[in-house]
Image (tube, rainbow, N blue to C red; front, top):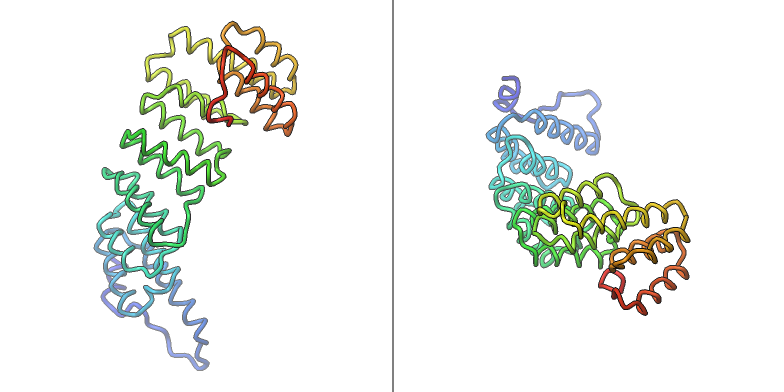
Length: 292
C-alpha cells in the first residue's frame, strides 16, 4: 500500500532547497502532511503508527495534530475507545472539543455510563463547562441507561446553562422521558417548546405510542387541546386561543403553559403574566416547575 510505503520511510522528508523555508512554513507543511497521513489511515494499526511518529517528533503536542489524531481514534470506522482514551490521556490540557468528543464516543458505545464519568471528570479537572454540544451526548447516554434521575440532573443543568430554549436539546429530553416511561414530564417539556418542529411532535407522539397511551382518551384530549391553543397562538389569535382554553372542560396545567409560553415567545410579558395570575386563581390547575 502507498500508505504503508510512506510509513516504512521517514515520514518527514523535506527536500533540500536553495532558499530554506521559514520555521512557520516548515511547521505548516508538517501539519498538512500529518493531517494527510491521518486521513489515509484505514486501520487501527496505521493510526497507532502515526501516533508513535507524532510522539517521536514532538508534533503530538501541536493542538491541531493531536485533535486530528484523537478524533480519528474516537470516531473513525476503525476507532477503538481503549486507544482513544489512551490518546486523550496523553494530551496536555485537552480543550472542550476533545472532552465533548470523548463523551460523544462513549455515548454511542456499549458503555454509555462512561460518558457520565468523563463528564464528571471534565467538571473536576478542566476549566470548561458543558456547552450545547455536550448535553445531547449526555442525554443520549442517560437514555441508553434508562436512568431517570441522571437525565433529570442533565435537564436541570440545561436550564441553568441557558439552553432551556434549544429545540434540539428539548426534543432529546422528550425522547428521554418517554423512553423512561415518564410521559407526563415528556409532555411538560413538549408544551414548553415555543417553536415546535416536526421532530418535537413526532417525539411526543412516538412516546405516546410506545407507552401504549396513544389510544387513551386522556392523551387524545391533551394533544387535541394543545394543538388549536398552540396553533391559534402561533397565528397571533390570542383571544381565540384564550376562548378555547376557557371552553375546555378539563383545564390542565399543560394547556395553560401552552398559552403562557406563546405570549412569552412573542415578547408579550404582560399578557403572559396576566394568564399566569389567572392560573393561580384557577381551581382546576396549579403552576408547575416549568413556569415558576
